[in-house]
Length: 215
Image (cartoon, rainbow, N blue to C red; front, side, top):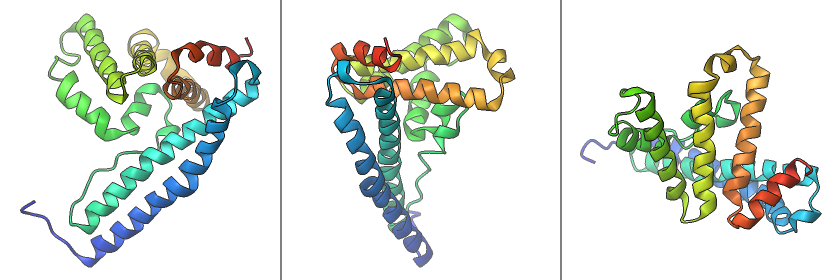
């Protein structure tokens, strides 16, 4: 607060950044979100495979444009008032692994959990068993942080599973795969994860995933 500085260049950039975020929210997030709203209101039994994937794709972009929009607006307001806030998103959907995705998505949240939960618990410095325990605690808390609902808890465990697989089961295999395959794998995992995140009625989750694969 004591070292805050204001100038016309920062204020002008702040206006530009705020308007960009507002446009993302109003023109993109809200519009794309209508597709997911309409599809998710349908009975799962009446949804086609294509319909479920279109719905997942719509929510995937809705949540990105929504989250990155309020981040842009916060950064813009900060610039207008003389504060420089860190970037919160770094093109997450170009990621080639789930680990990379969570380095690029909602950076302030993942950084907070790393600095104030994962590292104080010991991080990865005390053997595989303690590392798995620490990651499990972080992802359980990440799920609960989003809301007091079973689907958020399952969502946290879902991404924990893939983080553990990438770190301990097939780290070298993943690196050897072509970039396009790694990218496709990441997108599919993220798409399905957002479906789990979006459906708060736990009784519908299994039916939705079954519909995704035509079961």
